[in-house]
Image (tube, rainbow, N blue to C red; front, side, top):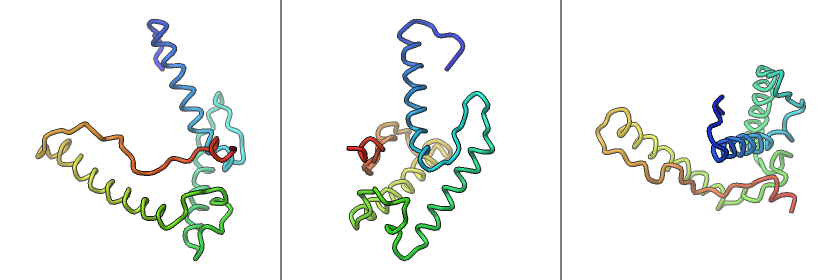
Length: 131
C-alpha cells in the first residue's frame, strides 16, 4: 500500500489486496505455533518457524511412505496422478525459467507475457477441507 490512497476505488482495491495477502499467509497458521503480532514484526521468529516447517516437510518426504506423516493427513492429491502432476509442473517450470532467461536476460527470444501465471496444479485451501 502507498501513503496516497487516491480515489475510493483505488483505496478499496488496496484494502482488498491486503486482506487477500493476510488470508494467503493464514494458511501457515496451523503449522506455526506462535501468533505473530504484525505491529511487533518479529521476523526472525517467523523465519525460524518456517524453517522448522520446511524441515518437517523434508523429513516427511524422506520417509518410505510420506502419506503417513500428519502434515499430509488431509491432502487429496497424494496419488499417482498427483505426483505425476507435480513432476509435470516441475518440468514446465524448468522450461518456463529457460524461456524467461532467453527473453529477459539474453534477449535472444521475443518477449511473451501470455501464460506466465498459468499453473497445472489444483490448489487446495483450508476452506475446502472444512467442507
